[in-house]
Image (tube, rainbow, N blue to C red):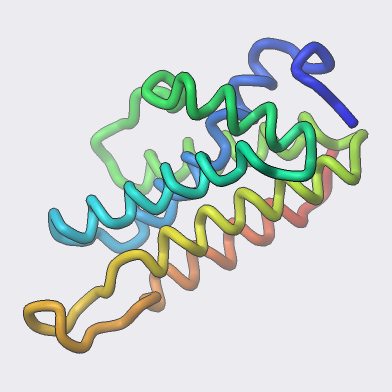
Length: 157
């Protein structure tokens, strides 16, 4: 199992930011109202906190570090939503590439990142009226989840 000292500072920062980047990638795929944004943000934080109890030591260590420094993980985001999504996806690619030689850690970390994204997508219902009806996961969010899954499962170098 890998640990923080096995990574460069840049790789470690990408690993810490990965789950938050995955959640934000989903958030930016389908903009919610203020309440939905709070619910989605809450889901991201909750999943990062829960991972501090992961059976995988690397995921646990990354989650603890990410939880301690959450406000400083993501880079400044451009005003253009598509460019911001591209930066977030690049962060996740960098994190997965850093784990290329550790398949057990890459699988556990990738599953965690995907879980954060899925919980974020399901956190707020889109559409409907006054909280009635609506869709738990919109087609745009589903597409974002599929894109993230491809990155998580993709080739690692």
